[in-house]
Every structure is written in structure tokens, then in C-alpha cells.
Image (cartoon, rainbow, N blue to C red; front, top):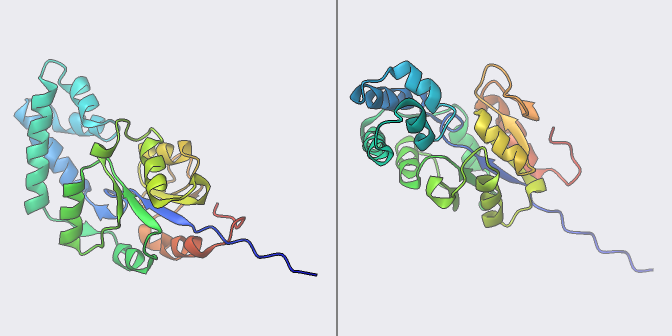
Length: 222
């Protein structure tokens, strides 16, 4: 009697948000938006509150509806590019160890920022850049649409059911969930609504993320 061939075990994949998940950029984002707000005579705290939950063009429409949105965007881009060159950045504790330990080809980045800024920040913090990086320019629909995470999975050759999303923000969590992926939250004092698991810090999640990449189909990731 011929034994049946063992079916190959599908690989597991990890997709990371960047700012707030791998890179601690909260102070930088607040400063950039604060400088932008002052330039337009707006309240920095109110502008930042809106910017946290919307994309830039949506932020401009909400806080500066009478301004030229393209001019607003150009001003913001100039400030952000300068911040990449001169701002102070740090990787969250555990990020270098985690990214260095992940097998090549099984992880990627999904960010609402732009690739050149991500590469600049990673270069300054010593983090490795994967082959798959989906940025704001790669998609027409950003988070919370599922499109960014689905595109990253496609580029990795992965099915959504084999992907783990690591996020810190509500819009990113919704994006991963809508893509049909497992979503874990990190770096927040309380769990973002919808996450399958919550970790107060990235460091706490490191061993669990590494274990996920070696888990067999059917293993619980929740």
C-alpha cells in the first residue's frame, strides 16, 4: 500500500505597519503637523487630532477647506522630507531583533507614508528593508480599505488566510480585518477594537510573531 504524500505546509507571512508599530514617530508626526498648522493659522492640537484618523487630503478638507489642497500637500511633504533628514527617530524595542530573525520573503511593510521616507527612517535606525513594501503611491485606496494589505499579500504570493498583520492604529486594524487576515495590535495601552490579540509593546509580541511564522495550518493565531 503506497502511503499518501504529505501535503506541503503553506508558509506563514507577516505584514507590518511602520509608524507607531516598528518606528516610534509620534513626536515627529506631531511636530510636522504642528508646524504645518501654524503656517496656515490653525490650532496644532486640533489639526493633529484630525490627522490621526484621516489621510492628508481628507485632513486638509476638514481643517482648511478654503485652502488649495495641492498646496497644502506640497507644504506637508516638504516638512516631512526635512524631518526624515533631520528628525530624531528610534525603532521600537524588539524591532531590530524581530526583523532580522524573520525568514527572507515571508514579511513585508504596508504604510500610509511614502517609500523614500520609510527607507530613510529605516536607514537611520538600522532596520532591514524587505522586498515587499506597499506605500501610499502604490494604491488608490489607502487604509482602512483592504487594498494595501491585499496587494502586499499578492506580492508575497500569500493567501490572506496565511497572513498576520501587526498594527497600532484603528484604520490599519480595519484594513487588515477587511482583507481577511489575522490582526494583532501592539504599542497601545488598550486593545484597538477588532484585533485578535493585543500586546502593550512590540517587544512583548516578538516571540509570538516569530512562532506564527513557523506554525502549521490550523494552529490558533488568535
